[in-house]
Amino acid sequence: MVYLIIFNLIPMFGIIMGFKDYSISSGVKGIFTSSWVGLKYFKEFVTDYKFGKLVRNTVALSVLKLIFTFPLPIIFALMINEIKHLKFKKILQTCSYLPHFISWVIISSISYQFLSQSGIINVLLTKFHLIEKPIKFLTDAKLFWGLAVSLDIWKEMGWWTIIFLAAIVGISQDYYEAAQIDGATRMQRIIYITLPCIKSTIVVVLIMTMGNLFGGGLSGSNFEQCYLLGNNVNSDTSSIIQTYVFDVGLAQGRYAYATAVGLIQSVISLILIFSSNFVSKKLAGSGLF
Image 1 (cartoon, helix red, strand yellow):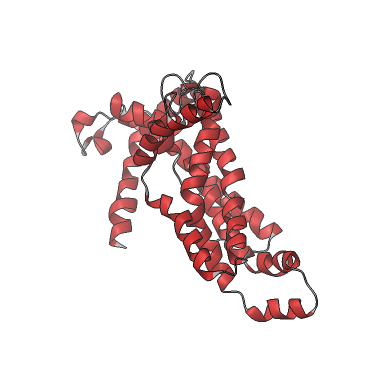
Image 2: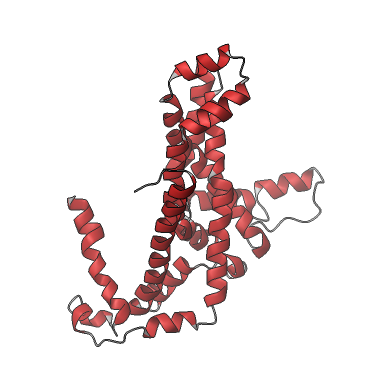
């Protein structure tokens, strides 16, 4: 509770900066004493020439991650659960979730070593005569979304698999024994027993993912990925709202404007949470709240 109050509740008062002509020179007091400008900064962002590109990149990257990174942990959990060799099962699970503990800073450095034009991947592909020229994995704007989604899957799939595996382990074995006696195949047991029994877990994770859709879905890593792997060459697809807020807020010192832009994204995320929860209750009969 103390942590939530200090780091989540108290900073909420800073939202007022988005509606005021705040300057960092006025200090904390200036948050409350600065002149009121209303929706000035919100209108400025919406009419900015970068607005369309930022929204497109943010939405596209988030939706792609939702499509590819959400179902894969469920599928992987089902696959691991079907492995009978206990030792191999533990090794596979451990190897799959270890990348979660590697920071995006380290991953970006590894990416440069492997995926740059003189990196290991391009060297091997060239030596085996699979390509004539090095592939510009890190500088081609057309490849950035695929690169970001692929790295995200590698980093976070194993970690979220733990959640679904825990739900699967909690299923009573009586269901499976009864189904086996009735002649149900392994795939039928997965479809008619495992998936329905972990439906509530899937719904909760999906709602959480939708709420953090613009942040990066399950991993919440859009900002770190785009900031570390983005550059002037691939900026057409790597520039998103979060990196824009960071650049404008810190590099240019426009804290009030950056607060307004960040608030827009937070409001959209809140709407997505309530919307996905409402739809989930209507379709699946269960929700987060």
